[in-house]
Image (cartoon, rainbow, N blue to C red; front, side):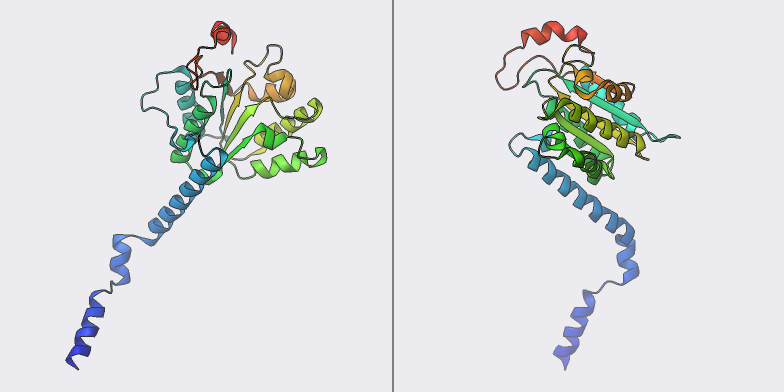
Length: 247
C-alpha cells in the first residue's frame, strides 16, 4: 500500500498544471515557433535541393555591407519589409559572366528574406525549369501562375537561357509580370543573368520583351558581384572593361 502511494506521489510530481505550462510557454507562441521552425527546415531543404554542393544554404549578407550589390540588396529588403499603402515591389538583378558568384549572392538575399519574413513564401527556380521547353505553350501561363501563387519572394536563376521559341519566352515573361503586378502582397524579385544589361544588344530587354522589361525596370535594380571567377581566380577582363555600362 505504501509503495502504491509513493508511486502515485511520484506520478503527481511530474504533472504540471495547464496554467503553469501556459505561463512558461504560451500555446500560441509555442505553435508559432513550431511553424517557424518547420518553415525554416523546409526552406533549407529547398535550397539544398536546388544545388546541394554549392553551399547556398550558408550564403549570408554581411552585417555591414561594403560592396554595391550588397547595399542595393539591403535597400531592396528594406523596401520589401516596409509597410505602405500599396504592396511593395522590390528587386535585384545580378548580372555578369559565369563564376562571379551571382547565384550565391541571390541566395544570400533570399536567406535574409527568410530570416525577416516567412520562408514558406520563397519560390526558387532556374529560368530553364520555369519557362523551358518541357512546359507546353498552352500550359505556360498556368505553370507560372502555380509557381507565383502565394509567393513573397521569387528567385529566378540563369535568366536568358530557356530553350524555346523567343515569342514563347516573352509570353512567359509577360505572364510572370502580370502575376507580379496582381499580387496583393509585398513581393521581392531576385534574378541572375549572363545578359549583362537591360538595353545592350542581346540584353534583358530583347530577351524578355520590351513590355515586361519596362514593368520591372522602375523598381528592379541591376548590379554585379564583381569581375573575378571564384572557381578559377581569373579576372574577366572584358567584363571589367564593360562595367561602366552595365546599368
